[in-house]
Length: 627
Ligand code: SF4
Ligand code: MSK
Image (cartoon, protein in one colour):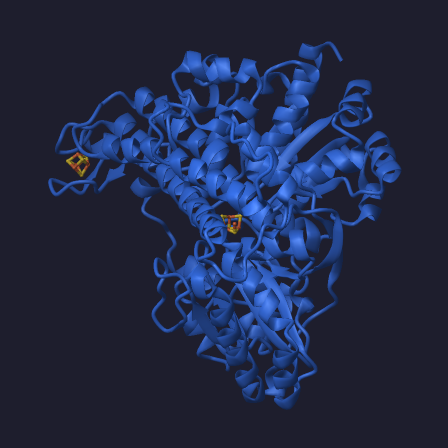
């Protein structure tokens, strides 16, 4: 039994999320293991792995570089620079593959919708479909939407292995940025090709030049940001609707004690959109009432949650480090998981309660979960079965163990690039506000939670600092959810912004922090940057903009940060990547890349100092533009 004072102190030091604290205390009191407990058990970490100088790639190893013992090379002869660079390329390729494979599934669903194989799906944004058809040179005149969608989806599927040596959507970038890519030799040739080549390059004995390896990492990440992720975003918009401004609620208090609570967790909106439809059917509501509930309450987690929040206003329960705590409310009947960022331990947590974990992806099976394989052809029926499962679980809930802390916070979301353009009346009012200095610049704050950082503190402190200095913030992923919980997605948050930014926000009725979506929707930030750059007539690298990932953990975040930098956006990480074992790699990433792509990475764990770096960078870019 843990001392109550220790429990109190631990909850305080682990999170700033007020709805998470009581549940953290509860989990500590009841011995329900969480990510923070496992993090503590893993300390201290292996110092070789932490600095990136351990290699386990082949059967001659594992190897570690230990300079003080004169172990300077692995068995094959690889030095610290090579081992660190290969490990980093591996991370980028993994992240790019995760985003892009998610994108492929959505494009395949669009194709099945077009051919009539995916019953229940439809074209929700025909205007966007036709705009994209235009980008591919597909003539849609006189043809119905489904026939155009068939051609568009095939053209997109082709991007994964195209032999044209160019991904179509890279043409959205301004010419000056494309020229940088051409000169640096990092124009992505196809989505899959760069990932496969990265995997080839991390095989033992393929290239020993750390810089050459890292430059390929940039190319791989561009295939993600301007390829796989952008296709995921755009195709989701075509199928489920392009987000527009809407107001909803965020934090764990969005659960309701009188309803069947179902959480949707992961990244892919293809199933969750069907669950929304199934949960609204009168037959399901009747069943819920028969089970003693007042209805069915769907809530989101992580990026599947962001997809639903952005398009449907479904309340968002929390981000990455909230995923176990939502079970500890005792009020969750079902958690539906698709893939990515899902703790393999969730069924263990759920076994302490009546909660069912339902896995749905053939590529993401989780022992201890109930498996309802999901295919677009039978999606609605599968969604109904899962909703029924939740209704059946409701009578098993123990009301004495229910703890839903606090009150939900209101949040305005839905800031797709199209919605921003519509709301501002094009990009020029934003560009004018930047030029006259009422908006100092724009920062994209993105990425995850990581138990190395007090939960949400990195995101919230940095975001508060940026808006206080007049920097408009665009957020995605778990960063956006943290901002929502802290009240930064309310138009009233303009009161926390510098006067110029506050006036712009009030004039347009928006918060100073724009929720732009899930982690694949970091591609929306690229498109926004491209739009601003085109408006001004410069490359992206000349804009007064920056990126930040204060609490990142995922390989996907490494790919995102890499495509930000490769696109010319200076990016500050709050968690040190595993690269410190190679001063040469650190130097290349934090200084050398400037000569190649006019942008670099920085690492700064202190969010206030990170804001200093971003502000200084934005001011430097402003003077470069003469504003
Ligand atoms: Fe060791 Fe080289 Fe094999 Fe890595 S690739 S495990 S450094 S022998
Ligand atoms: S869910 S990748 S923890 S943002 Fe997209 Fe959050 Fe990072 Fe997963």
